[in-house]
Figure 1 (cartoon, helix red, strand yellow):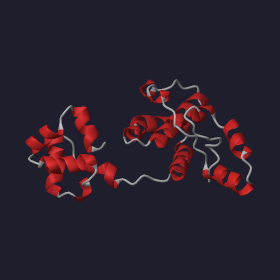
Figure 2 (tube, helix red, strand yellow):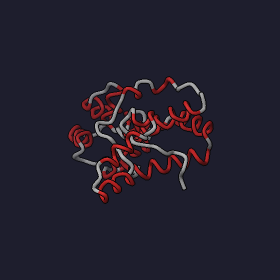
Figure 3 (tube, helix red, strand yellow):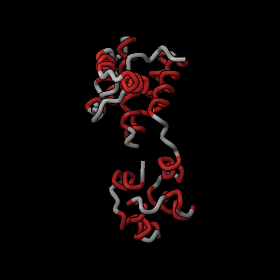
Figure 4 (tube, rainbow, N blue to C red):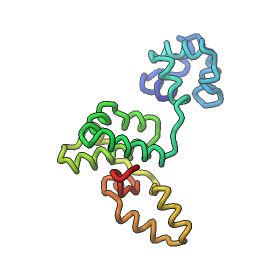
Amino acid sequence: MNVNEIMREKHVSKYRVAKNSGIPYMTLNDICSGKARLDKCSAYTVYKLAKELDVTMEELLEPILTPRPAFDLFRSNVCHRLKELGDIDFLIDTIESDEITTYYKRAWYPESLYLLAMVDYISRMNDVPLCDSYNEFRKAKLRSVIYPSSVIAAAAVSGDSKIKEKARESSIPEFMRFNIVESEVRNVN
C-alpha cells in the first residue's frame, strides 16, 4: 500500500501526519503526489513517517522496491506453483497468503484477477466451495482482454484475427469472466 492509501485507510490528513511526525508538510506533499520518491528520502524521514502511520518501514517501501514482473511470467509462475503444490495445497496456500487482496490493493488487477480465476477454476474442478472473501473482487472485470503472448504472436505473424477469437472461445470461463484468455493451466514445462 502506498502512503496515500495508508493515510486514507487510517483517516488522517497530510497536515496531521506532517504535524505529528515532524516531517515538513511540503516534503510529505511531494511524497504523496509522486514528486519525491520515498525510496530517495532519508532513512530518518521514512522512519518518522512509518512510526506516525503505525506501519513498518518495509511496508512503506515494499510497493516501491518490489518490481512488478511481466504478466506472462506471473502467469507461468502461478501455473508452475499449481503443478508443484497440487490443487488443494495450491488453494490453501493462495487463500491463506491472501495474495489476491495484496495484488488488488497494489492495483495489480490482472495479477489479482488471474489468481482469483485460478482459485475459482481449481475450486470448481475439485468440487470445493468458493471462498466468500473475494466476492467483491468477482464483480471486477479488466477493461480490455488480455491474451497470452503466444496468441498475440500467432495472430500477428499469420495476420489472422480469428486466432484471437478462437482463443477466447476456448478460454476457461473463470478467466474469461475477468477478460483474461486462458485455456491451459496444467500443461506447463
